[in-house]
Image (cartoon, rainbow, N blue to C red):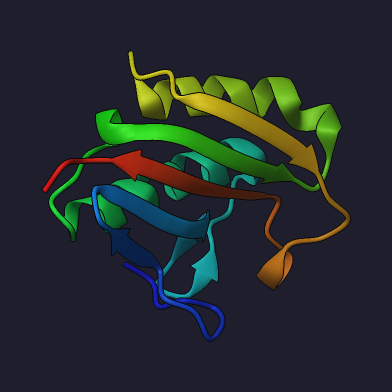
Length: 116
């Protein structure tokens, strides 16, 4: 897992809820090459790693909040998102933003529910 790019905790458990801070398509502190598809795939892998660190998995996610720097890439993002999430379909919001840290094109935040 890459270290956070700012002064925050990447994953927090609050009772039965697990909140994962926004994950970029980072590997070893750098944005992966390959555009939105590659960044989305890596962001999902990073989500999975954060969840695993607290004993949860992607099927425990109840809601994601996704950020894209270019809404014209929405279809490409969706394809990579579905590939990463498999049959799991949490509630989701996707928002277009002007910029993301480190020049990323995709960021995914997640809220998971996993009773202790």
